[in-house]
Length: 253
Image 1 (spheres, helix red, strand yellow):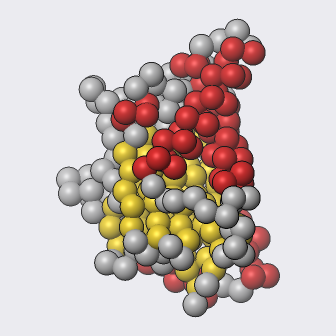
Image 2: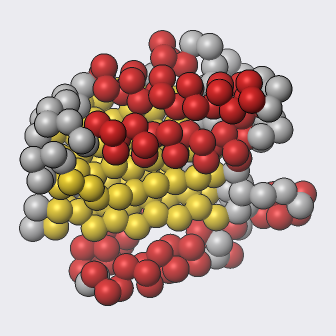
C-alpha cells in the first residue's frame, strides 16, 4: 500500500491588496519506515495575521515537523500516540523559540497554527492547535477529525507558540490507515465545512479524491499546478480573501 499526495498554499486577495506575502505553509509526503513500510505525513500551518513574522513561523513549524518525523522514521518502533503528538509540537516550539531568541524577537512574533496527520498500516494520528481542519476516512466514512479551534473572541484562535499550546493540543487516534485525507487552513474552512455541524461537504472533497486516485505518477506535477490554480481561482476568491492551504492524500491499493 501507499498514498498519492498533493499540496499547495496560495495567497489570499486581502494579502495581495495589502502588499503582503502568503502566511500559509503546507506539506504532504510519503516516506518509508525503518521496516520499509510507507508512512504518510501531512502538515498545514497558518501564520497569525497579527504577528509580524507569522508566515515565517508557519514555515518553521512545517520544517520542524517534517524534520521531527524524518528523525523518528530512522527508529524501528514508535507509536502513533498522544505522546508523539506532544513531542512534535514541542519540537516545533523549540524551533520557533530558538529563531525568536536568535533575532531578538518574541515567539509571539512567529505565531501560527498547526495541523498534522500521520498514517501507516498500523493506524493514524491526528493533531491540531488552532483553526483550520482535518477531514479523513479511516474506515468509517468521511469525518471532521477535530472540531476547529476558536479563541475567546470572534476571529481569534490558538497558536502553537502560545504558552499553553501543549495543553490546548487536540489529538485523535484511529486503529487503521487513512484512506482519504484532506488538511486545510482556515481560509478554506467556510467553503468545505458546515459551520454549524462541522461536518465536511462531501461533494467538495469527492472530486479531489477521485482525481488524485485516478492520476498516474507522471501527472503529479500537473496535479500540483491544478491545485494552485483552483486555490487562486475566482470561484474560491469570491468566497474567501484569506490565504488558503490544502493538502490531500488518497490510499492506493
